[in-house]
Image (cartoon, rainbow, N blue to C red; front, side, top):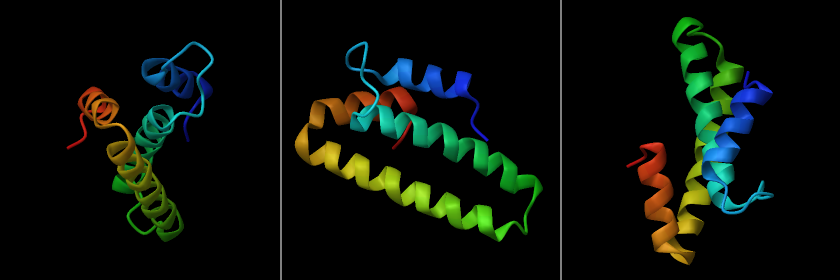
Length: 87
């Protein structure tokens, strides 16, 4: 589970302006944190299929946000993927 402190740091690292909480960059950053936390959980709990389903949904959601960002603004897409270590 993602703690509020980890979520706040993920938001702070990807914000465009100080009150930004809903831009695609922020959403991708938060989803990436959640995905890494859930991946670590699934390494120890291999048969937790309900969490695995949630992980697959989060990955698909992150992929759609990244696709939108890539088509709308390539420069912002390149910055966020480099910052998060994606691709």
